[in-house]
Amino acid sequence: MTTPVRWGLLATGDIAHKILAGAALSPDIEIVAVGSRSAERAARFAADNGIPRAHGRYQDLLADPEVEAVYVCLPNSLHHAWTMKALAAGKHVLCEKPYTRHPAQVDEAFDAAEASGLVLQEGFMWRHTPQARTMLELLPSLGEVRLVRAAFSYVMDAGYNINVDSSLDGGSLMDVGCYCVSAARLLLGEPIRVSGEQVIGPGGVDHRFVGVLRFPEDRLACIHSGFDADAEFLEIVGADATLRLPDPWHSVTGLLYRGDEEIRVEPTNPYLLELEDMNAAIRGERAPLLGRADALGQARTIDALFRAAATGTVVSL
Ligand SMILES: NC(=O)c1ccc[n+]([C@@H]2O[C@H](COP(=O)([O-])OP(=O)(O)OC[C@H]3O[C@@H](n4cnc5c(N)ncnc54)[C@H](OP(=O)(O)O)[C@@H]3O)[C@@H](O)[C@H]2O)c1
Image (cartoon, rainbow, N blue to C red; front, side, top):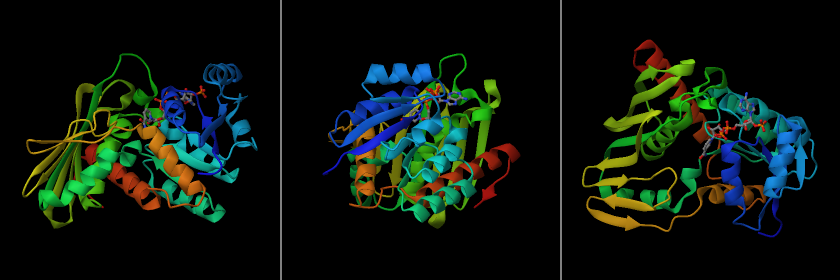
């Protein structure tokens, strides 16, 4: 990399801190500005994290000529609107997952990005890890894949947060189940029909969601997300062997198990990896790992799962 990419952060929440820690590991990623709804919060966040410029309105960050690329880390319901504004301002965008549950918004955003020659990517950091790459390399050794089981569930602290707010597109499927959807689609392709069950809790959002997805050639996936129990794993059941990842989403351990055989990869900060991938795409070195087709598949599947759970029917895609 020759010239560092100059990034601006759109919001000051939890994940903004994690992206900062990833960015700090590379001299090619400069966080030059932060935007917040509050000038005071922006100034404090900038001072605490050594960021040169602070903006008290999101639109001011987008108007900042020093900013080349924007990391959108707003609540889910705001992703699309602010991505569209960032693209209109001529900025590349890495937008946190899930980009949206509305497929039409994916097309609108990628149409805008392509028309302006800008890079847009949905931020699924787990896809960038050496562990995910090793998983794909091991796939042929499992024989024909029959079933994928994926879980991402945690015990949420009591009280308000954006994930229990239905007006901000909260809920466990949106927050963490989208990772399970991402894994099932990566391993099996696009689902042809889905069914789902959800348990609605405080805030009117799903606090537990279980989905069953059917793919071509009789391949199946079962996904589980939740706010009321701890469960994280990804299991790929092949005709000859089963591959199990106990820590698939954050890849802190870098461990995979093919049957009883332990396979260990070097864990790498996944936020650094997704930023490096964006940098390379912005500098024209390669296409981003995740593009329109992936974001569209995500939105279609999530939308179908919600419809299936709401109506108690099997939804075909
Ligand atoms: N990839 C990952 O590992 C990962 C992990 C966690 C979250 N995420 C995603 O990142 C996004 C943000 O999550 P987070 O955990 O950082 O959330 P958070 O801590 O609640 O932060 C969200 C930020 O959005 C801004 N905001 C704008 N409108 C808001 C509103 N109406 N209510 C609350 N905040 C509002 C706030 O910043 P200002 O007040 O400064 O404007 C707030 O700090 C979500 O889409 C989530 O799915 C990804």
